[in-house]
Amino acid sequence: MALKADASMKHIGIVAVSAEGAALCYRTICLEGAGLLGSQTHPEVSLHCFPLSGYQHLIDCGRWDAVGERLLDSATRLVRAGAELLICPDNTVHQGLDLVRQRCPIPWIHIAEEVVAEARQRSLKRIAILGTRFLMEGPVYPSRLKPAGIDYRIPNVHQRQRINQIIYDQLVYARLLPESLAYFQEVIRDLAAAGCEGVALACTEIPLLIGEAESPLPILDSTRILARAALRHAVAE
Image (cartoon, rainbow, N blue to C red; front, side, top):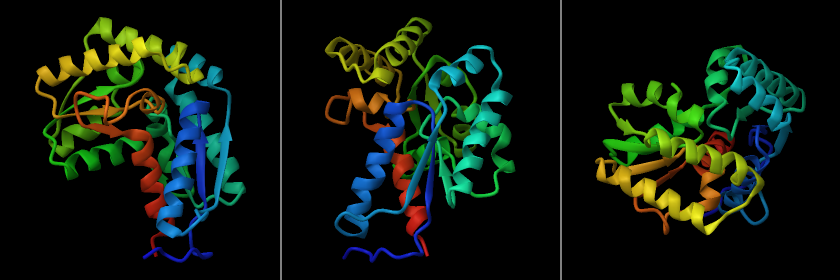
């Protein structure tokens, strides 16, 4: 039975970084909200987005503190708009978020924490991590996986570079090419051969390219996992 929507639902603030990833997250909240709450119903949602280019310049320079401050700026604007909980559908910038999260006046749902919780629920012992080069080589997922007792693997150096190129040259512009899908499938097969039991799509645009039906391994769709977590928190009494 669908829950009745009322004023007790929390206002979700989306701190957007890339347009396609944020759009997928927003659509998931709205569409799956209707299934949970009733036809055409979802929690109130606000979104703020600085241009991706500004974030990318800071990331390229390794200025994660400044990335965090920019996220906090978006968060402050959303709080002023009435947001009561925050999400950021961009895995890479969570390296900056980890530096400022405690300074935010409202709860912030962390994408990697939700993905790791889903992996634990599925009893996965080793997962593959796909995302930008910065994400795959960075601390965001390892810092959550190790305490959870989950091992992980990332693609080799050449594969990481190619995946990064596909993300920035194609996926952020919603260019979904068959040859890129085939490449991701090849990489996932390699990671399956390395003992991975599932694959975290830890870039919010990757689920636009490859889904459960196309993947050689069960997927952990970080974008939709985050959106569903926001819905749960928004409607929880």
